Amino acid sequence: MLFKRLIVIAGAVSLNLAGACLAQTVAPRPEPTTYAELANLSPPVTSGDIADRPYRVLGEVRAEVRKATAFSRAPSRSHVYGELWERAQRLGADAVVRAQFGEARVTLMSWGSRRATGQAVKFLTDAEIAARAPATPAPQPQPQPEASSPQ
Image (cartoon, rainbow, N blue to C red; front, side, top):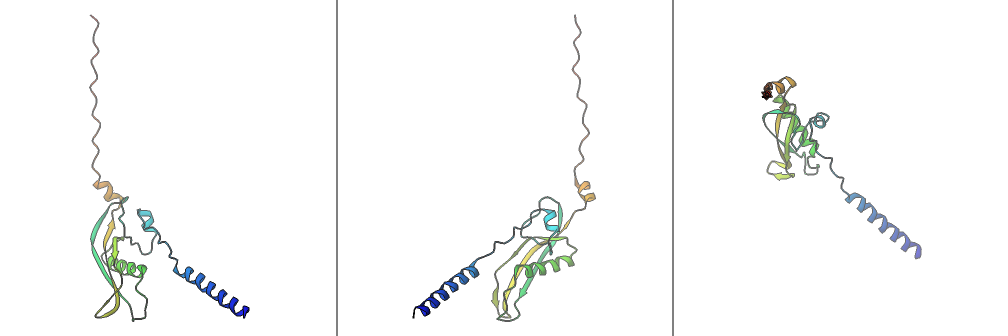
């Protein structure tokens, strides 16, 4: 009888521990905020903006990713970002910034879909950046004060 109680208690404790492990959430990686960080991503898509390298906006890209069946998992962030990147590549983009997507939802034609938007951007080359920079004016010579002659 005591042995049965110990087995039941051990089972309950192990189930609680397993449930606690499954309930833990993994902190998402921080979104890149620099050109160098974004260039190392595959695909180069971020929800933030890149402020350390000028770019030109090619246009807004939109994507909708659907679940295959009612039992499939909801489209992940990486899947949604991959679809945005595919569409941005067609425009000749180097990256997608300000990417946003909503939660998966059931629609008339789908068991679950996620819509996403972002801005396809092309980073300026070093030559384009130099051409955009305002020319710095040449320094003006400062007038020298006249030395007063002794009288």
